[in-house]
Length: 221
Ligand code: CA
Image 1 (cartoon, helix red, strand yellow):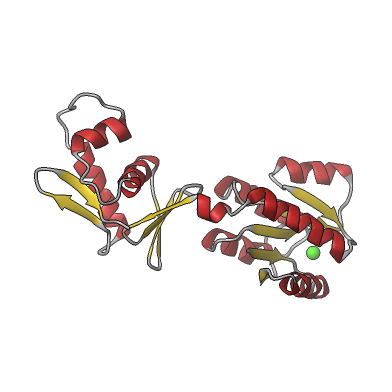
Image 2: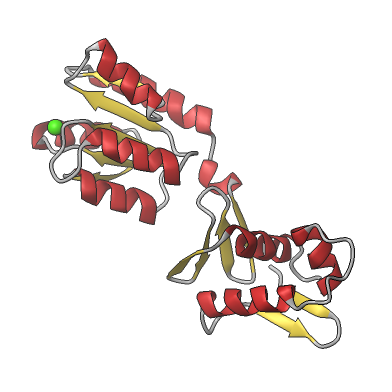
C-alpha cells in the first residue's frame, strides 16, 4: 500500500511518515501543494494524506484537482482548521476523511486503515493490461513503458476494447458497433483514423497490430 503525505511542517511529516512506515506502508512525502499534486497525478497511490495550509498551492485546491482527476483516490485531510465550515468544504471538495490537528498517531492509523480497506486496491481494479499497455480507467490514461498518454474519450474506449479483447483480431465492423454504437457501415474510415491517432500518441512502441483485411489486434498478455 502506497501513501502520499503532503505536509509542510517537518515535525508532523516525520512523525506521520515514521509511524506509517513502521506499520508496513510505503510513504512518499511532499512538502508543498504543487509538488504533492504533481506526484499524486503522476504516480499510483492508495491514499493521500493532505494538510490544508500548504505553500505553493493550498490544500483545498489540491483536493479539488485530485477529486477531478483521481476521483477514486481517497484523501484524508489533516488540518489545524477544525471549524465546521472548513470541514464541510473539505468534504464537498472530495475529502474522504478529516482529522483535526493535533491528533494522536493511533487515531490517524485507525483512520488510514479504514480508508485503505474501504478502497481495496483501487489501482489494481481500475487498470486493465495487455500488450505492455496499462490503461488507467479512472484517469483515462495509457501507460506504455515509461510513457504516459492522455487520451480522448473515444480513443480511450477504442483502446480499452482492444486491450480487453487482447489476442483477438477485432474487425472494423465490430469496433464501429462496440465503440461508436454504429450498427451499419457509415462508409467512412473513422476507425482507421482513430487507430492512427492512437498510434501517433502512444509512439513507436504502440502494440496495435493491423491484420490485413481482418482488423486490429493488441497482443496478449
Ligand atoms: Ca501546514
